[in-house]
Amino acid sequence: MMQRWLMLSILMLLVATAADAQEALDFKGVKLGALYSEFNVPGGRWSCQPFKRTLSDQVCSQRDNFKETIAGRPVQGITLFFYDERLATIIVAFHPDDFDTVVQALNARYGKAAKQDAVLVRSRAGVEYKNDRIIWKPLPDTITTERYGDSLERTTVQFTSGWGDSISSKRIAEQKLKAAKDL
Image 1 (cartoon, rainbow, N blue to C red):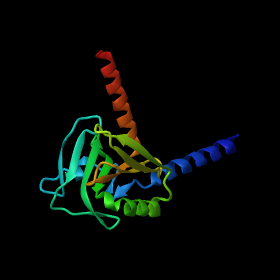
Image 2 (cartoon, rainbow, N blue to C red):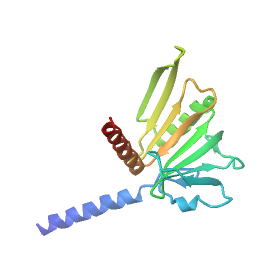
Image 3 (cartoon, rainbow, N blue to C red):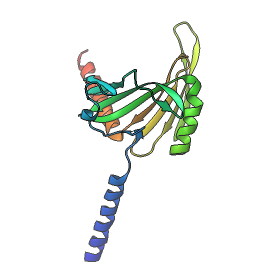
Image 4 (cartoon, rainbow, N blue to C red):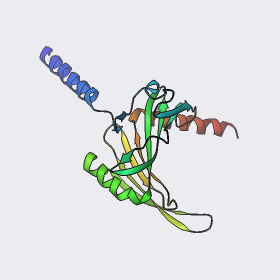
């Protein structure tokens, strides 16, 4: 009985250690879970401000005088979203012509995508557009890249922490409940 308990304890310790050792997703060294104070530096690379919404508590955008690339292609902008002073989501915007190049690079780094779909969307003018979405799930986080059929100017890749996604889902549910009570 004591040996079983000891073996179970060791197994649980190994599982917990493996989970702690898992690297947080990052984009060019900007890691999910990083502290807001690391980015909110006057005159630094990021322009930060409070942004108490469903998506975040604070938001930072890369300043225009800093240039970045993704998969060797120019980035149009990077936006960081924080919950409780911790980085929950990184959104990188780039030109739609670079979508396939970025997807190939993500496949090379994270393996085959967990999900790929296309949604047809009809505009008010009756024009149909195809929105492409590809999702990777390096647990517990998610990477989603989207190409919007009606946008000739930008597409995105989004790195989202698992805990940030949980907070967002909870806030959305609370918002819906609040709205339902206001009928």
